[in-house]
Image 1 (cartoon, chains in turn orange, yellow):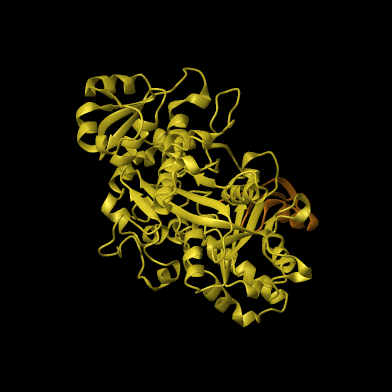
Image 2 (tube, helix red, strand yellow):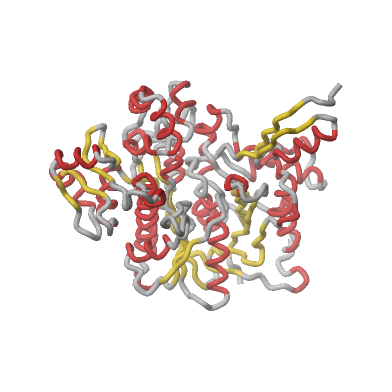
Length: 41
Length: 477
């Protein structure tokens, strides 16, 4: 069901960083096509 | 709590004092990075922005600003009614125990005096009436309004006061993007605001500028030309402006964590005997003015990011009874540590405290990234300090130092509301040092741990975050 789903993961420094989101989603079968961490302050 | 764990003697460096200033520059908000781009795309936004700018009296009476300059303790902020931008402090003054709020006209006067390359010129009659009395340094370049207009038509940045055209800021090179007018205005604003804070702290402490041996700037600006973008040494320019004739200096940069690294570097110069009096300074970030202005406009709030934040601290060898940095507590976030908030808290709080024989609950007050939530929450950026405090509290729960139902109590008793403008390096823990010194001097607290973080990934050279922390306490010998 998850295979082939493409994901853009934007993380936040004080929350969950982008690479961590990407790792979790890839583990669940998603394809992460772009990930980044941003700082909103 | 053992102060001499494993027989190690604490390594302390004295903090002579610290000053904080906010320079209120409403007419420069439109030159912040975000407003500049958005107004170019949608010129009507410029008019909306102008209508939502605060005057100096409102910026002065804004409770977080009064905390910043030392007239209100940060713990009192939670007792004050919100929204703070509507519930202004009656009788507030721009002079604070730690520093001051600087009016725009004074800033323009300082800008003119600090400009060694004829970058900025002002309309003569306006300057003589409003700014001349604040001039320090070089004579200003004064011109007629017609000449100012011509320079603006040729590409100079228009400088305004209450919307009135009163000056022009020119590029230093036609092709070099690093010497464009917008960039040089940022750099000169950083220099001027840092120099003002350094003058302030030297006056407060009755220290002669000539007694300073080294200046470290942790301002955020990338000073340099196209071959040396970000080459730096704004520190020496600041030292020169203030008359620190016996000092040299250099810059320390680490995104928002820069000031904390600069303090560790400065303290290390003292501890090693390289210098006996070191100034650590930072000017304000003009690029961050109005960073969240669109959210503020949508919520019909004043544009709250209208000030440049600056500070200056003086370090010297520790004296008995003095408030000090614990250099042996200094901690950094190593490359291999991981970027999760928990990993950060472990590296920057738990591990350095353990080295001193302390637990998380042995720290009386934490100074984290103290961004004013009234600025960040409306834009969806959340309450940054609260998130940081909750992370520390959660770690204390995981380590069995408090119960889960004590987390809010941990946050309330060891934390505070954010009160710093979103100036990046300024809110990142260093903003609390002045109040920490006060609380330590009156023995309201025994110690404070300052923790700053930096977003290295913004520069696109690494995915890493970063951080730096150190403990401050009284030199009880």
